[in-house]
Length: 314
Image (cartoon, rainbow, N blue to C red; front, side, top):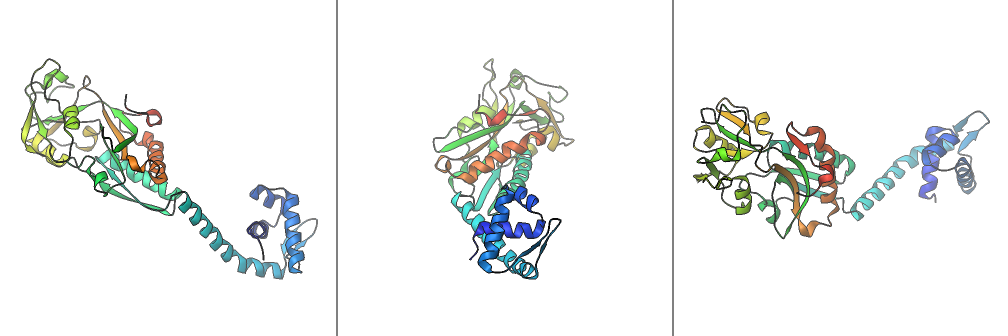
């Protein structure tokens, strides 16, 4: 009966046909390779390799053993790898939701890297609409969300802020502010924001669509609630409302009936990773979050800054 280490040394030497290269590849000493092969040959009572001072070759018996042993060893290795992944909690399917086109790019790219590194764990990607906010975490249709912050809920963890960028405002092409290159918070006096209902917390709505300017002037809310960002932009295009966003707006929603203006004196827009607090120990969630933070910087749009190490909100 050959032990796993003996199989590994035999099969590697059968491929390399060189004791020093085999030792280097397995990170062991050449002496250990030699001793292991000799021990195996003594136990079997037959030479597996023909060795001279210049070359190493498989004997006929050695070649036959290699051919039969290779698939068995690969099966053992795969079984052990699966057991190790299961022990690390890296199996099953992780469902990840994203809000907005840019977040979709990050999640899609992260899935490719994550599944390559964790072949026994699949990732299902779903879209999170404007009216969902964090509802998919609570109803179990998502395990992890990459969404627009803030989120301040006792049962949820904001694992990391991925990006932070300048606030933008979408207005109709014929809007009174449309010809500006930028606007201020105070310029929003008398405007009407969209309305969002359903599962979106009032604190989130007030952060992104405040009811008062810094000078105390009122900002209205439209009576017709929007459930998706596409619905919101359709309302904006008719001049009935304005809607906030971030630096991805002018890149992803170029339309002749819309204009996008930075509002530098309003708080920045942040995208972050959120999951159920009870899943803090889920290694799949943590691993996927790490991958998102790793791949986000080269994919970030202009005007958006990736937050170093996914630091918490400032």
